[in-house]
Length: 141
Image (cartoon, rainbow, N blue to C red; front, side, top):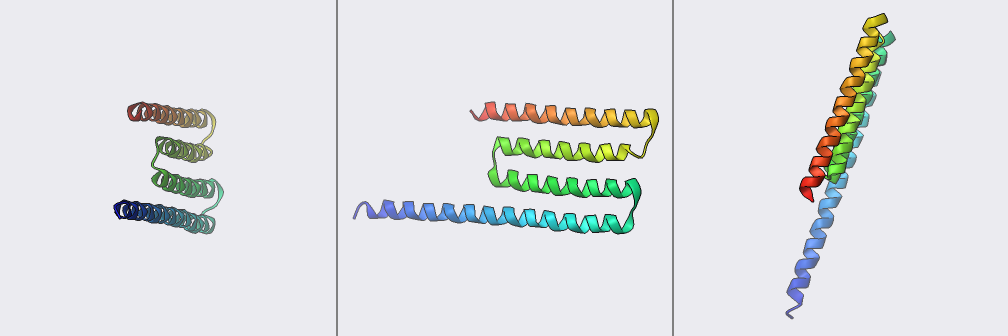
């Protein structure tokens, strides 16, 4: 009889944890599905309303937003230093791709300067993400 109450509490805790992870998984899937729907709508708008490099920039922005949303959903689901680091890298890469595409409208030295600034911004963001990741890992250990 003495073991019954602790075992019942343990079973309830396990069941509650299972519900929580199931809810988190459901929320993650919903966020990813929303990101895909938003991307499809944005891409259709880009295709319909724009042409040339403006259309390419618009599509890169739509892809970047989709990747950011997916990375955020993953980081929220996992709640680990590594997932937050990967989210930051994904955001930096997405921003870099958009910036590079915007540079395509320029020519000559302006284009070169634009591309260099895009690379520099990407490198800064990567370095900041690495530093934060290392800091977070050492503070939790």
